[in-house]
Amino acid sequence: MEAIIDYLTKHRFIGIAFTRIPRFYEKFGFVSDKKSLKQLVYLQGEQEFLNTTDEYVVYFDPEDILVTKIFQHPEKKVILPRFPDW
Image 1 (cartoon, rainbow, N blue to C red):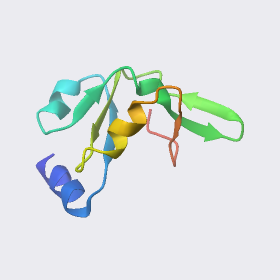
Image 2 (cartoon, rainbow, N blue to C red; image 1 turned 30 degrees about the horizontal axis):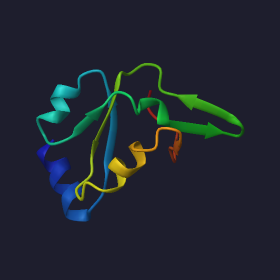
Image 3 (cartoon, helix red, strand yellow; image 1 turned 135 degrees about the horizontal axis):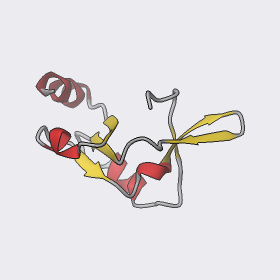
């Protein structure tokens, strides 16, 4: 996990994961958020897919700007670029 954090920080990337055990990720600096899980969707044509298997979205935003701003607007959807592994 430390290598992942180093990579995200070095390249100024944002890491997002879905989990049932947020405490593991929080130990490494990720922020957990339960209420924003339904904001992250995958679209296939007109069909919307939501994560129904996990309880939390966890994220690491090196600059602590983008993800915080997105989750401040729960009425907005975030479209995932590929079908997630859920």
